[in-house]
Length: 275
Image (tube, rainbow, N blue to C red; front, side, top):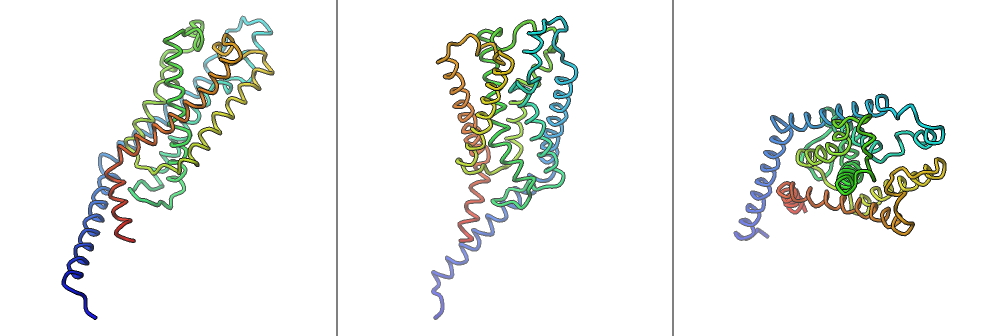
């Protein structure tokens, strides 16, 4: 039984709509994976990977505690080393993330697509969503808010002589700025909210456990603010740290959906036409 003229028209209209969607996606991918946009993304990742790698080197090998500390104070400063600070762990995390992103730029997949076969791309997207973006903004915002309130609670003036201001901005400011630049230059699908927040919360809870281990062996909290807070406020502060990390995750997810809304709509239309 032949198709009616109406059915034929609907078939051709649907076919033309699908072809138009595919054409827009092809145009989008051509602009996104070639030309100026491609080099901008590569430059962001190269700059970030180099900057954070050098920051780790300088922080670890060139920033030293004063040599006139008493034995007890030296033990407190030495136990856990630089790895007891979320700032230092975060800059390592950022260096790893941007290196993976750089490798993906060279060998992986940057197309606007619903499904990618690139493991580098999958790793890049998950690490950014669950760890790199939220932890960078948690560190940046928490540090500068406490610093403006009372810097002695987070970054005592005594550190000014051994911790250069440029390094302070690399580890406390640029981590967030470069994460934002990355968000605007890399199309990504966020993982499921359960998967992303599980990774996000696991990271910050492990760090809080690590804080207590350092406290047990050194006899001193890593951050002076934890020393001056009474017990109930101390754990309220740590709970807020976890909660704020989740808020930063949700913020990244929301901004990503807004920035890449046109691309998500095209992918949704393409999927609907294939069904």
